[in-house]
Every structure is written in C-alpha cells, then in structure tokens.
Amino acid sequence: MPELDVAPADEFPPGSVKLVTVAPGTFVGVYNCGGNLYAIEDRCSHDDGPLCEGDWDEETCTVVCPRHGSAFELSSGRPLSLPAYQPVETYPVRIVDGIVRVDVG
Image (cartoon, rainbow, N blue to C red; front, top):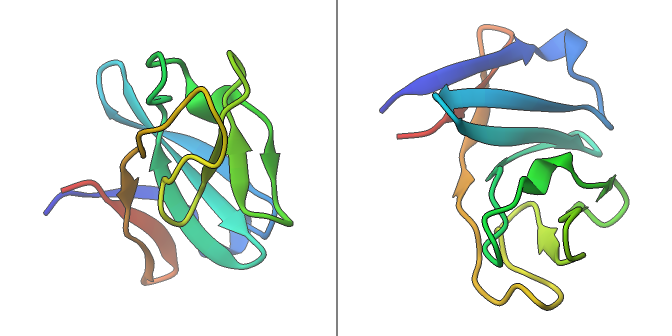
C-alpha cells in the first residue's frame, strides 16, 4: 500500500493541517485535531468541491465545505449537514520513524 510522507511529527502540532498531493489533481487533507491524526479526501461529496479549503473546527474535529457549508467528520468522512449526504473517503495516518504518513492505498 502506498504511503505518503506528510511532515516530521514535531513540525505537525495540534491544530495543524496540510494538503498532500496523492496524484495530479488529487489531494488529501491531513489534520492534527487535538493530537489525533486524520486524513480525508479533498472532495466534497455534494459537488466535488475542494473540501479541505474550508474552515475546520479543532474542537469538534470537523471540516466545512467552502461552497455550500456541508460539515464532515474528520474521523469517518461522514457528512453532518446537508446538502451533502454521502460520506467522503478517509485514510489511515500513522507516525513512522518520526514522520507523519498517510496510507492512500
């Protein structure tokens, strides 16, 4: 399974977010929400908009699509508000030898 390096763990504190290129034109947002690491596809299930360009809330571990305001749970990709009703993909994140990595396989 392909893993992508995100950042050294000590440079990715709680409250951090990084957008990682998976393939040309395909991105994943990686979030450090209160010390827990989450990766979610950068695509709103409502209209394929750039989900990770939206605001996110570290307290609730959610991201809000900037186009129409659908909120998604970072841990599961589950939509929490309309107009989105389909979940988005999430990916495992781990720290390997001090590097935050996301498994996009």
